[in-house]
Length: 393
Ligand code: FE
Image 1: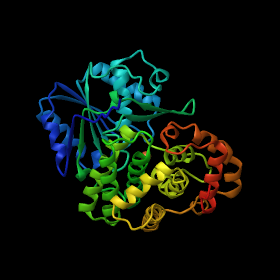
Image 2: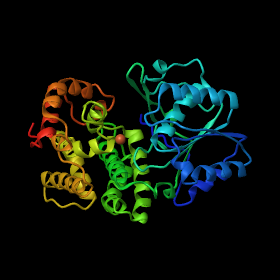
Image 3: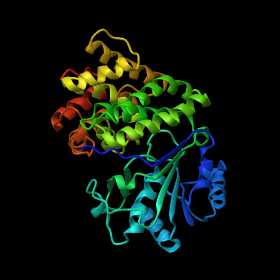
Image 4: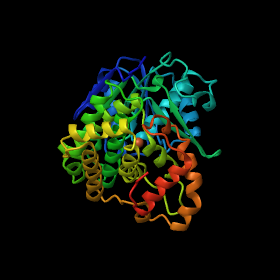
């Protein structure tokens, strides 16, 4: 049996934030991040639309990037006091991720993160509130996914939460909110979305329900990301929809080892954070070459190339075209081709890569990768990415 779960309503297009007027309820808590939505006037707009809907509104502001267990607890506490029947989360991935976890603790005050981290084992939500999500970046697609990541800074652990109970009820994908994004963020989040779609398409859990979403998302990223990066707002609006389509695909088909590797290298080196989307963009062509040694995955990658109009007379030529396309995008977007070029020091890389490789193999995203991998092979793959060597194993 397969399951395919999405928000019941996805409002999209410029100005769709206004749909908040039509939510039916009594009280809404609006969860936001550090202030960019406020500065750009979207917070006031959202509050006013919710009031027009006849609701009493309370704000929970200041959710930090990589939201913490404490923020989640504080938010849940605020919700228990205010008793909203709508949780509305607006911003980059973080406020939405945090609000998803707050929701669980609001409805189940006795639950713990340890209870929640078993995948697809959440208690039944929506006994107290429904959930609307409004993204202000174009990449994570958390507005349509069953995922959230919360960090316990004291224990130094990230809790990846995964359950269809936290798939929002309503997503509002309004491109006006992403018009002010800086170019580098457009680049990284756009490549994150491309990685979501490609990994979902070749995932062992891909299905006929997720395939069309993934393919369309890839096609749109190929068509619109460079122009969006250069500041074309029509292209940026297309990218906002594309990342959402990719999210619908990967929320149901899951991901692969590009994400496993990005998760475990993000904060691993002393030379600085490797932004999620940038890491994905760098690793993606190498992983395609590794996975394509598996005949089923090779066929799927070739399909992506063929269906998005790339050239190639054979399966191998099509896969090469796909990798070349990603390489070209990385050049246009200013993304380095190797970890060395990114600035990771060679001796630190050599010292840490065995442990990182083991952690990456153990990441939640490895299970749905189309080709199995062990820590020693993962280390070889990382070494190829460090020096820019051909993946021939
Ligand atoms: Fe991602």
